[in-house]
Structure formats: structure tokens, C-alpha cells
Image (cartoon, rainbow, N blue to C red; front, side, top):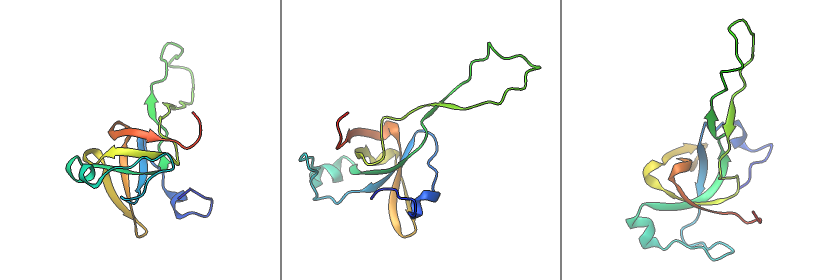
Length: 124
């Protein structure tokens, strides 16, 4: 499922270092052959799914040495971007994930540190 202009997910904004994941069918293999056996999914609390949306990343502070109290400077927040990209297949820990239901579909909001591995179709 990709994000399109007329998609209902367009209204969602993912915050910080989190990603929105939709679970993949348990018995489905990827084109490269990646497959999580059911035993691993049950015992280890590991799941796999496709990243639908990502947050902006980790905020980094603005440098303070160029600022003077009399200056009227608009703060622009800068971010360190996430490794995860929309469309990636993610293997993630359920311990750090939050399950949400949005317009009848189940998703997981997962912090990047709970993602164990990514599979990307295109070349890096």
C-alpha cells in the first residue's frame, strides 16, 4: 500500500523518529525470499510489515553561538533523517510498538530503535 494524494492516510502526521507500519501476511515471502516462520513470530514477539509513513527524524538543536538576544531569528528545526523509508519491509519488535486502528485498518506505530532490519527493493 503506497501513499497517494487521495489516500486517507494523507491526513496522518507521524512524529519524530517513529514510523507507521502495516503488517504483512504471515505466510507471504518477499521477492528476495525473506520469510519469518510462525514460531519466531509467536516466541520472539517479532513482526514484519511495510512502512507506510515515516516521521521527520531526530531533532537536532540549533547552534547558540551565533545568537544575540536582540536578534529576531526564526528557529528552523532540523532533523537527522531516519534510515527507514516508505515502502521498506521492516522486521520489528512488538515490545516498542503501539497498535492503532485507523478507519478500520490496523497499523503499528514503531520507534526506529525497535526496527531490527529493513529490506528495500531498490538499490541503496
